[in-house]
Image: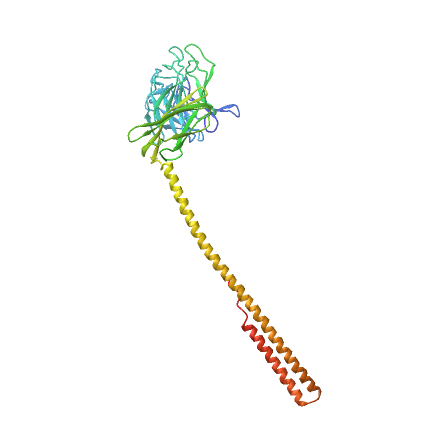
Length: 447
């Protein structure tokens, strides 16, 4: 399958060098440029730049010969040859890299060869051999990142020999193989693919005597987990929370069970071993109790065994260690109560001192208010006396004015002069009174 969505078929039996191209949308076939060398049982895979590698096969000019087709330019070039004259094996691309498994070397007898073309090195490297010789198998990349070899035979002939129902998986991260659940039907020269929901589909193939139309599927899944503590340190006699969470992708988790303990790094003493069954797929928070008598120092919370069950499978997590620093135990309760009582007594003393200061300030304030009120009362009395004295002076002046007026009415010049003098005196007295009031006005009380 090309990155352009077209299907490419290269070579074939009888010395064919055809490049045949199928368009699924148009449901039609066209021809591309023919292969430089016609091969039978060569294997093809598409890398990330869109080019398609065709490696090995019967009819190659040299062992492991690699021909590279460019669908855009419709042209061929030569790639780095594989380490051996491979044919009737299986090949897939993972990014820019290629993986080639099993097949025959110059014949149809199965081998345990497993090669990878490392695009960064531009060279082939040998990986861990297959668990058993295998030819005519299918190979796919699972959703879990593992490479699966499905079925096959001890040789590449269509008849005779045998057929395998076994499935093995390769982990690129560890360079290790493992056994997987077998198919119900043994077969070779089968097809295989991986669906978006995580299943490996095995289609058709043949036994030593017949061709099959059987389709089987293997459900893959992705498993992840996490374990953490709520704190990196805790006092002896207290506790810390341990959170555990497991997640499956493509299948459903059912329940899990685990056991744990606390161990001292200093002498290996184990404290409070315990276990728990978690009935759901939700995360769980577990209280880890640290004994009050545990000496201060470095410890580990050890998840000894954690089994997580899902639909038809289970995963086991073992010996997970979480560092924890244990601090000295807090003071006894009696000592804490005594310390709190002393703090309360000291606080009461401070409150009493503050109360005394407040009472003194209130007394001083009341005295100041009394003084202001007395000053205000005295000032009012003075004003009243001044007004009365002035009224007396005005009455006396009025009496004199009446006398002057009587004299003036008699036509005497002297009377007129006296009247003018009296008016001047009254004006002067009035001015003196006003100036006296301004000078005696008390200042406003302090706030």
